[in-house]
Image 1 (cartoon, rainbow, N blue to C red):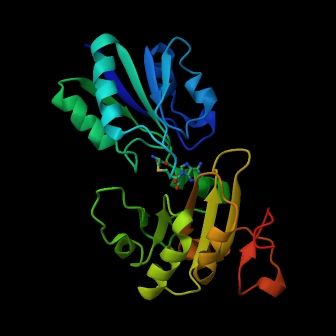
Image 2 (cartoon, protein in one colour):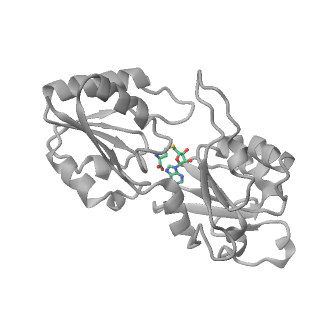
Length: 256
Ligand code: SAH
């Protein structure tokens, strides 16, 4: 019987995986990897059979049940099986379903954490998610509800102050803005959207919550997080008097 390692590949840049994760990959026999994992990260496993089980929103994806079963079967045949996930495995990655399947089959597993997208986005922005006197909490949330999943009140965790980072939300920007505004969040709440954090083509945009609905009109094709909170009021931005109270955009052609 082999062992299954759920490894966080990090947010995108291939050198943002942990040393532990890279070392296990080097010895891996089989690697099941997500769509957002960089090819150079998969290449850290030179001897492994590599299997793409990627998921990107609204694209055909491998059934979760199939992934669970494949992990179990692979562990019965191989010594080192890796489930390589974008960011950290334990956030918005359905890791629990895989862990439950492994436990039910009596297969040993280990989780190796990774840098989650929220932290890579904060690094790209150069803005601390917590700040003395301004934000003492960080909420990681997603408005996305999977098939067969019960909708819960994601906005409750976002509207109680502090900093919030929304995953898998850019496609629903108008709905998110409406939900948060109707819950009483100020339309002036500073918002940052960071696309492809940690990667060379990373872009970021700043605007108040009242402008968030427009995010969907623009060409974001990479993975992106929406960050909200007072800490972003002073995000590094080229001040443009004309837009000052409206929105700030920098480093791109956003909204032009
Ligand atoms: N487990 C992952 C999240 C998987 S859900 C983690 O810990 O980061 C996929 C979502 O993560 C995307 O829809 C996007 O919201 C976010 N994401 C992943 N990589 C990203 C990146 N490089 N930049 C910005 N957002 C990213």
